[in-house]
Image (cartoon, rainbow, N blue to C red; front, side, top):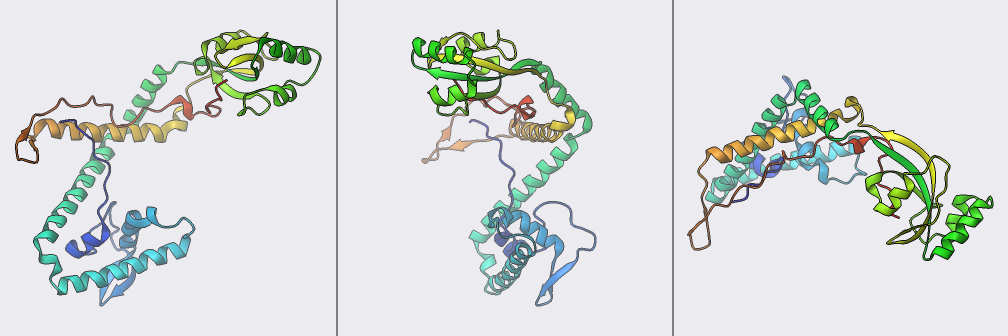
Length: 308
């Protein structure tokens, strides 16, 4: 079968509280003596419990719920959780086969998360981050970039007329605003781009020009263009510190992906169809490491230009 790398999973707070008690953490190490924020019938709710619940349900809370109000909401949730868990246990709702099945599922999820966290932490070293960075930088050599404007019109005659106005001293951006059929252009501004970002005919003409120069009419599949070069520069791979977080994330995800792949390789996994018949195993999908390597597009000015 095709191998799928599982996402980082967090257990549902309610199910865990019912089955395992509020002392089981969702992620991260508990402090030695966590601050008690509340008690419910003598059972404490600590700052660590609040942090765990915040990790679990926080992403689903309204963004406008901030600061103390956000913490109070989560604390109230934990109080409700303990009260509901206590009643469920008193009614022996936690002793059904269905509960045991769900509890085993959430225990497995937490166990997997702990394993992947451990793997990621061990793999994310300064040496590994620098190696990932160097490999990505090597694959992305410096490239010339230009900042250009253009005027796009349907016919060559219209392009020649626009060029005549510019040669006559009119402002390029003003003429572009009046005449250009490119609705996305701000005075014909295309921003910064490398040669491979535009159609070949446009790039060939644009990259022959120097700063301040204006082209003759250029025909592409979009129509006729007049191009002006505002500036030029060399786009280099960003420094390590600028993409350090990307490198660390890539290293961690790659290590997790490799770990799961190794577990699959060492295990005997069988699939069955609706009739209980074995399903033949399919070749595993190529392993890409789970994430793209650090990209030079993280550098300033690497925004995607408009296509002429």
